[in-house]
Length: 260
Image 1: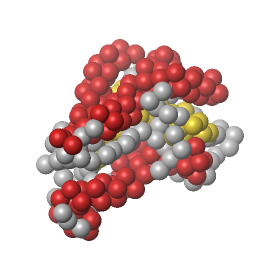
Image 2: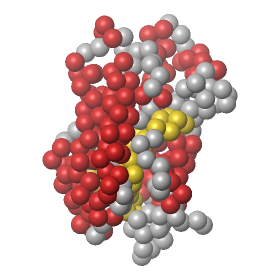
Image 3: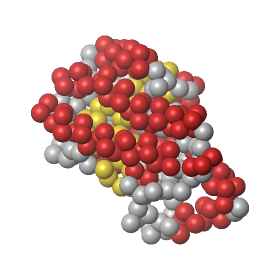
Image 4: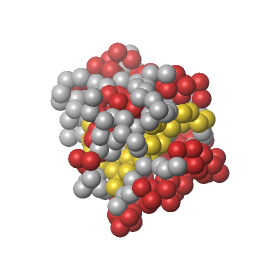
């Protein structure tokens, strides 16, 4: 098995399900020890049980974490760095969504999306930078097709993901002198539990059935199927590998062409 990041330590947010779980599996497959964080510690434990293990070099762990809590983020990153003696990869993946018309959006919905998606990415990045400077590490953020392509009923989510893409590019410039690369991945219509909820919301807002919405997503994807979490995780794996050492500040779409 090819293990291009053997010996590395990867700190992952939102690792309890969906894309995050697929990313955790990819990092472990590639040889890293994975610090799986999630607000749902039981889900994170389930993820850990699915990971490749090559003891004693490869040891995974779980930390319960609410990425909207700046102090908790600082403690979690410090705990991970001290546990392993180094931190090499930061994977900002924690995300949420709700769906509504702009005129009906509540303050709570707006702040919920920004607090988790944008502020969470910022808090984790800020906390990890001192350790990543020592390891000349990698940061990969989960943005979205919505970071660049407006999506109806997701104005708040779209704005938060645009913020992630912009933050990625600026951070890449600032951290380049330290040998740290910073990139983001922009998934399209991904088959996850979060997407299932969104399909239900959109169906209600548009007076359609959930299956009609799902089929529309597929029609909007030139490659003719929905994105799988593993499709996204594969790109994360590439971006933390030696082959991507000269790539930074990029937003890579994994959409099957749906962003075009």
